[in-house]
Image 1 (cartoon, rainbow, N blue to C red):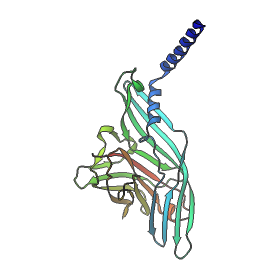
Image 2 (tube, one colour):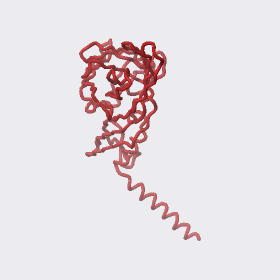
Image 3 (cartoon, rainbow, N blue to C red):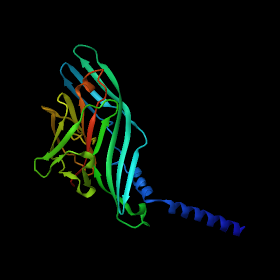
Image 4 (cartoon, rainbow, N blue to C red):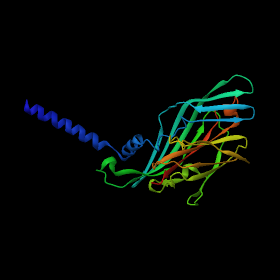
Length: 275
C-alpha cells in the first residue's frame, strides 16, 4: 500500500514538473497580458456627453460592450519581445435627441470597433523567476476605429501644458512607445491643452478619462477651431496612477442624425499624474 502511494505521489510530481517545464516565454508573456487590467483593456464604453448643435439638443453615450477574443502576436528576439494586441468591441451607441418642438427621441446605433495597442516586454530576470523573468517595459498609444463605416481620422495629436514641461506632437500612435517609468506626466490638477488635427471639418471631438473625482470627471467636448482642428483644455486628475486618456472623433451625423452610422476614430494616450 505504501509502495502504491509512493508511486502515485511520484507520478503526480512528475506531471507537475512536466507541465511547468512546458511553459514557454510566449506563455509567460501571454499570462502577463491576461493579468493586466490597465494597458490591455482598450475600449470606449461608459462615457457620455450632452450638448447642443444647430436645432438639436442631444445627450449621447456608449453602452456597455462585449469583446471578442484578442488577437495577440508575439515576436521574441533575445531578451526583448514585441507584442501586437488587437480586440473587437461590440455594443450600442445612443443619442437622445430633442429636435425643435418635437418630443425626445432615442436613436440606437450598432457599435462595432477594433482597438489595437503594442508593447515591448523585457526579460529582466532568470527563466526560473516568476513569469520566466519577463515584465512589461514599454507601451504604445492605443488606436481605435469603427468597423462598419470609418471615414473620420485623427492625423496627429499635440499635448502642451502651461508650464511648458510637456510639449509633444504625436503622428503615429501605434509606433510611439513610452517606457512605463517615463510616461508623459502631468502635475496634479494642472491645465493640459490637447489639439487634434483631423480630416473632418464638421465633426466632434472629445476627451474621456473615466476618473470619477469631481470636478475632474472629464468628458470634455473640444472646440472646433476650423480646418479640421479641434482643441480642448482639461485639468489633470488628482490621483497618481497610470491610465489612458481617450481622444476621439466622430462626424456630426453619428450624434445628430438618426441615419448616420457609428463612425469613430480614437487615440488612447498612456500617461501618469505626478505624486
